[in-house]
Image (cartoon, rainbow, N blue to C red; front, top):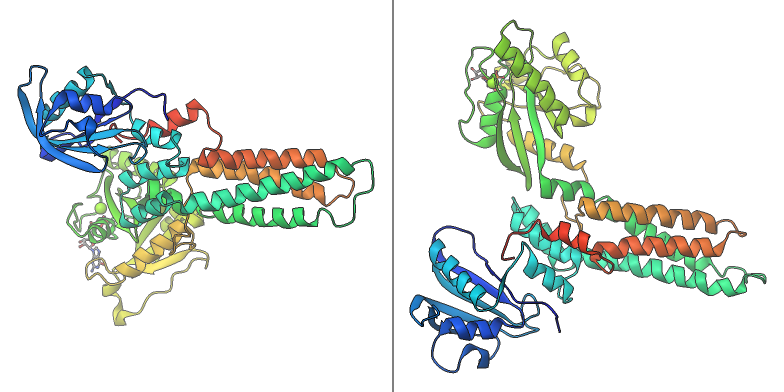
Length: 458
Ligand SMILES: Nc1nc2c(ncn2[C@@H]2O[C@H](COP(=O)(O)OP(=O)(O)O)[C@@H](O)[C@H]2O)c(=O)[nH]1
Ligand SMILES: [Mg+2]
């Protein structure tokens, strides 16, 4: 089936562990197993696929290196769809490297990052979105990110992409079929089904594009900066969200002078939380530098929590600071509400477009509400159900290109005198962009950029 050579790699993470796994895939896999594995007869190459055998890995003189389990998977019933063996040995770094070395001596080549998965793709076991999902799954930093990657691995995104592809190809074929009529009058309504199909494809593409915000959040996470004047409770807020005493809290204004970063999960989104030095006028050079960094952090963040004391409300310095932050990136936090007389929230004098959360970081009141407001700000309020797709930046660019071509085709069709060969060419080009997502169409460079993100042995 494949003209590939035989590749080998340690598939488990480096370091000590219960077991380490060395994986070998390709036409020489079983010959290599015969050379390095000594166990009860018959030899590995004469064993059935889907079985395992206990024995010893031996060096070239037959001396034992380690006890091991050998797993035998015959093509096409393996991850790569090639003949594959996996050796489970004791999990020491020296042992696993020695065994890999034996496999290389016996005729394997050291695998590149992601090369097993690349073979799974080239041998038709996975499409490109599924292969990408493998990397996403390994990298997932939250349950929700893992669940989204798993859906993509199971083919949920592929199914939606393939539907758009089929719609575009059929629409193009229908248009091409009418090209023969070009000299005569076209029968009325003959292009109606094309328009209908195209309308579906456009809707599907727009729906897919709308999942990008969530996809980006799940894959890359978001950066949320905590800003505000000194002493309003920024560091206390970081600690409260984190659930431990990370930042130093004191009643002395100017305590936090450098930025502090911590990872947390908010409603399934990985979030980098950044505590900053308070923004105020100061003569202290160290604090000034801290404030400069704060402003930099705010500029590059996905969201800014601007904290102020609920008792005093926003003063003119706050309002100036806030005016530099785009409203869609701003969430006001009125803190210390435990100190409000009669427990009444002081009305925040600011326009209605900006959301406000009321908290007491000391008692914990309002923190859950704040978290959900953060999540809604980040995902634009769309989320809460992964819509069987959460596309990546690569997918976004290709769908967008297809959308532009398809829309052009659609607009041309509204003119009865349009050049139908141009319409068909646009539709073919749109289908080609969509085909690149799943890898119907690919080139070596693209595969290189996708699979180099993987770890060795996957
Ligand atoms: N009563 C009350 N005190 C708070 C609250 N949050 C923070 N503080 C206190 O406010 C002071 C300044 O807090 P800190 O987190 O260091 O403020 P920062 O300068 O903005 O980082 C500390 O004494 C905190 O204990 C709150 O919600 N209620
Ligand atoms: Mg602080």
